[in-house]
Image 1 (cartoon, one colour):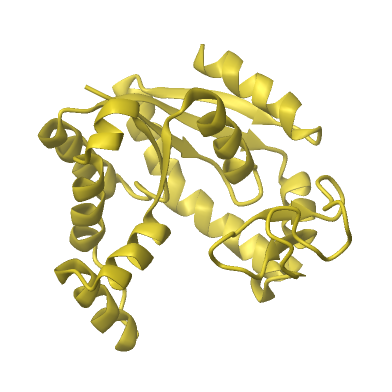
Image 2 (cartoon, rainbow, N blue to C red):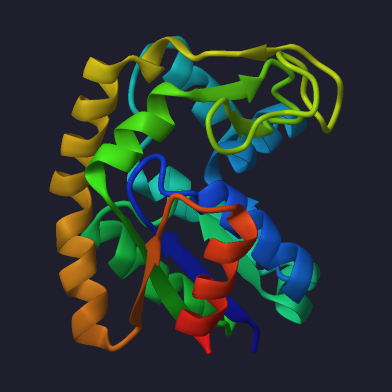
Length: 219
């Protein structure tokens, strides 16, 4: 039985950075629903074909399709032996119910749901200062204020150009935070009631300092 972790938190709280540090130290596998979608389409699996058709039609990908991908991934041997950090699932309470069923079916257990909280002004500053690697296979994230690349405009990981996403304007950042509040508040209540929720505060400090807070929260 493997340990499954879920990180919740608003955009800009540092889930990606802290998740990378957590996986590197513990050996658990980072499972991103976005990457699962891309992998299934690349393999041209039945799920991948469904996803491709939905995207081509401009339709949303249903919870059932996402849950099927997550279930398939969590049943694989590497997850069974090492555990994983789920990124992007669940986002809603119906998805949380689906995750509970998936864990029972795949003989895994929910070790903890970590809520990464952060000051709202800091989040807006982070979101509008963010730069992402233009190489989608890399996906590294930097911040011109708090996590600058070694060379301006160049990804430390792969050397590709760093870009500012069009949705990183202040107005878009504020809207994204509003959406997060609406979608995630029920999940916070859900996992508080189940006894799985733990909390940490992401501060405007070096990533390693926030990671120490994460380790304390999960201890």
